[in-house]
Structure formats: structure tokens, C-alpha cells
Length: 75
Image 1 (cartoon, rainbow, N blue to C red):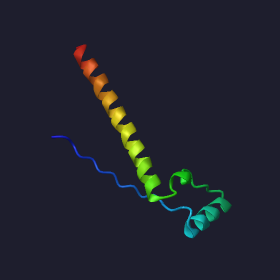
Image 2: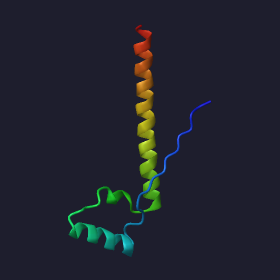
Image 3: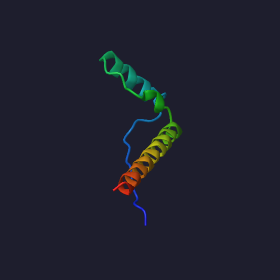
Image 4: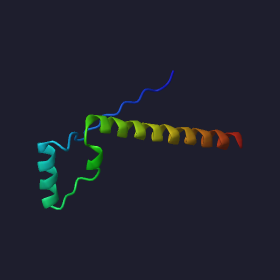
């Protein structure tokens, strides 16, 4: 049986609405740009970002398992 992993993301969405625009402008006037805001345009863009991130993590985990397998087989 595999391990189930959950991820809770607390990120802003809909940054093109009035509230988002005011927040971005307010932060920029204080010299605090909101890094990654271009990926927070909608709930769909956030889902796509998470899908890409999860795929990358799965690939990295697979690579680490392959490396471990080969290291153990050398012993």
C-alpha cells in the first residue's frame, strides 16, 4: 500500500480583481513586490501550478529511488 501525502497551500488567487490589484499596488509602494503573483491569476492557474510541481516532485522522488537502488546493488 502506498503512502498518501497531502499538501495545503495558502496562496492568493484572482489577483486581477479589485482587491488583488489594490493589494499588489500597496505592497509595491512599500518596496515589497509579491513574487510569483503572475501564477495567481485564477484558481485554474493555481491548480496547474500545483500539477506541475507535483509532477516535478514525483520525478525527483523516482530519480532518488533509482539512485538508491543502484547504490544498494553495488554493495
